[in-house]
Structure formats: structure tokens, C-alpha cells
Image (cartoon, rainbow, N blue to C red; front, side):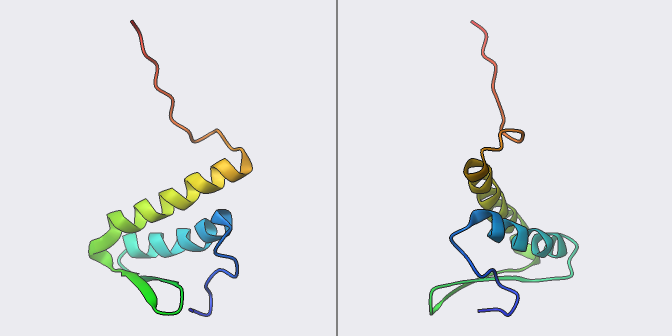
Length: 81
């Protein structure tokens, strides 16, 4: 595991906080994001994978919002009729 990797992968808030600057660096073209899960599974996101990395971050942020009860960023649709 990378030396700066989160200590608790079960906490989506910790993972999202760790992932945010990495996705930003990827968006700026100055970084690569490596996520290792388990002993022998690693996923790497390069500049061409920005949307996938952003989707991963959005997933962890949504899980964190559910965990903390944060409803500020949830979308609401209004239906008429």
C-alpha cells in the first residue's frame, strides 16, 4: 500500500479526503492515482481516466454524506403534474 494511503478503507470520509487532492492533481495533469485493495489488486488512474477517478471520488463522497447525514449536496427533482 502507498505510504500516504488511508489507514481505514472502511470509512468513506477518510478515503474521500485522501482521494480529493489526488483527483485534483490528475485533473491538472500532474499526477497519477493508484488505489490498492487487497493484497494483489491495484487500480491506476492516469490523465485519460479523469472521469473514472472523478466517479470514484463522487461515490466515496456520497457514501460519506450518507454516513454523516449531510443532505446539502443531494439533488432533488421537482415533478409537476
